[in-house]
Image 1 (cartoon, rainbow, N blue to C red):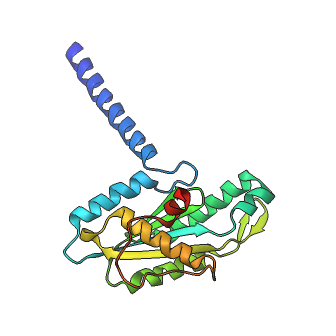
Image 2 (cartoon, helix red, strand yellow; image 1 turned 90 degrees about the vertical axis):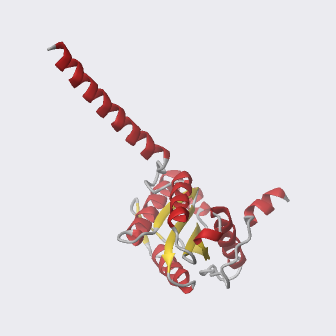
Length: 205
């Protein structure tokens, strides 16, 4: 009887430990406000993608930055701003549903979408336009009709030959090249990716 009880306790203990490990993993890889993947999750998925990539396989990344998000917080308060970010996240989740794409909240009002297995560079252009259009839709947030646009920069390279930092750097560079002009989608002319993010240069200046 004692042995049986000990065995049951051992099984229960293992199950509890496994459940705790799953919960901890989820918390470590999920943005608490939006429920999207976070930066560590993006790093983990990208590393796995690189290991499995075939020779010449393309990978893309979109960097999405909300335009004029600060005035929403200043005018309506941070609670409305948080609910707007949750609405944006819901749109990203809907767009990535049924695909291999991964939507990520990087920080604040900055999001990314990993685009695995692209067949051609132009595939990122098409997806960038889709995301830009969807994110610009009017939203009902806490009884208020709000509309924000998003600047979207895209980067594409061969999965085996690039790094996540390089993709983020190129997408960021393209996005900020575009922002002062029309705030429309930016797409790289070639798969080559600079390794430093434009914002990092600004902060260092």
